[in-house]
Length: 423
Ligand SMILES: Cc1cc2nc3c(=O)[nH]c(=O)nc-3n(C[C@H](O)[C@H](O)[C@H](O)COP(=O)(O)OP(=O)(O)OC[C@H]3O[C@@H](n4cnc5c(N)ncnc54)[C@H](O)[C@@H]3O)c2cc1C
Picture 1 (cartoon, rainbow, N blue to C red):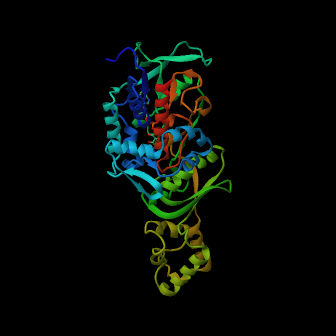
Picture 2 (picture 1 turned 180 degrees about the vertical axis):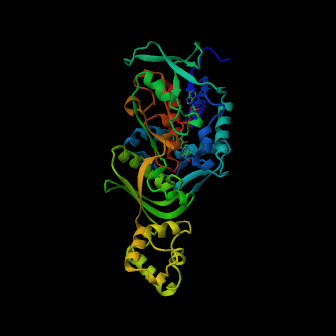
Picture 3 (picture 1 turned 180 degrees about the horizontal axis):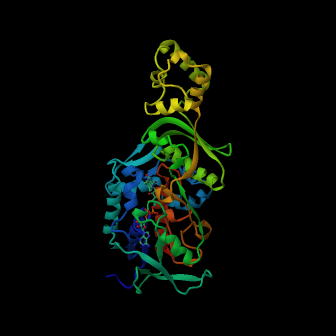
């Protein structure tokens, strides 16, 4: 079915694998792309809630910062191929893009399938040989030593003993999250077998579970313009402003996801993590108290329930009054000073104890991966095995939400392809 030898074999048909295969083939390499599921770009098609937040308008330095202390590794990849190059590429394949809040870039179709289709066309146009439903089990090197002198000689698929020969393999098998999309960690296992170190794999951009089970009553409630601060053993560790969501198990939504990696880190140290939500971050305590008092004048005869509704989404009111220990039909003018204090405190400091994160399978991204110390940032080639290259989520880098993770996948893919062809 396949030839005996290919110039390049790419393992994994996700965002980075498709792009690197297309780029290598466009530069003249006879390229084979192997994908273990029945479809290319499964994860890509669910990105950005099915709309695909492709990249961001930010400058290189904003990007570098978004990946934390390891971000500098990407300078070379970004100077080579960055957000405007990516947009220009998709424009060439008929996808127009638009900019949304926070500089996030989406296809104007609001449909990630346009991105996946463009990449499919790119592969077809450049005559990449494609193998679907084929799981690569092993990368074969010229001997089984791991002394740094080994070089790639081929790969093995499934249970077959046959080796498809090549001297260049790009490993683009992604992370561990959303395993139904095909990313189940195969690449880590293959790289480890060849002597690579894997930096510990933990969920990042992941929803969080709370001790308080009243969150069940709030399931589905999405709040905008709120702020959240996470504390570990009483110290502030991070905070955010924007949108959040209550779920049956706890908290999710952009500000929670952004804080999650740090929260996980502190939970792993057995620290007590509390997230305090401020439902009224635009008002300081005094202004909020004044407003409440004003309501007493205007609505004193109304029930507390009816007045609080003006301050909070309906779904929150019963939970709120229960926590404040105030009967919902009490007249507003009858509430005591202490009860008012309680209300103000709940409005500005609604605290939930975080017990754990959801499992890595439910994370948007995997933190950790192939150690950057073992990858050449100028080429994406392994420093341990000649002819082995990496791109995408498999490497020890992860970014914020906002299009940073896909740009990472595409930029590292481009650099890997360029290196493979020029080496
Ligand atoms: C719900 C969700 C929403 C997201 N939204 C965004 C967003 O809007 N913007 C953004 O920037 N990022 C987003 N991300 C992150 C982004 O999807 C990933 O960073 C990106 O897909 C990583 O690309 P990749 O090619 O490295 O890995 P993947 O896309 O995971 O692709 C890896 C591929 O390798 C294949 N594979 C694995 N093992 C083998 C094997 N042994 N043999 C052959 N094939 C194999 C898999 O089947 C898979 O197709 C989102 C992630 C999730 C889960």
